Length: 102
Image (cartoon, rainbow, N blue to C red; front, top):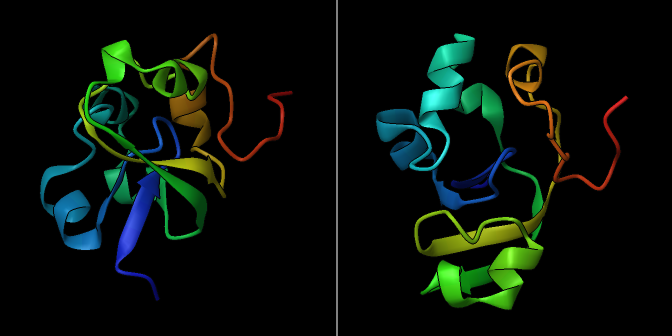
């Protein structure tokens, strides 16, 4: 099993220990509001990595919709589905696995 996981909402990649200890630095508030754990909202299966030093100035960050997030490593594609409790809180949610919301 991979020791890194990617957030299914923002795509940030962190170690399993970091996520279980601190949650997602970008999305933890949403996960807490939905009543789900960060581990339920992350996946060990992801593709592509992009390093973001200055997300607000990066066209790639804008393309990945992470331009308002913290600097870090982001996955281009994250396999998996967010819990419905999280999706229900996000009217403009776009899955990071390439599928569409029904």
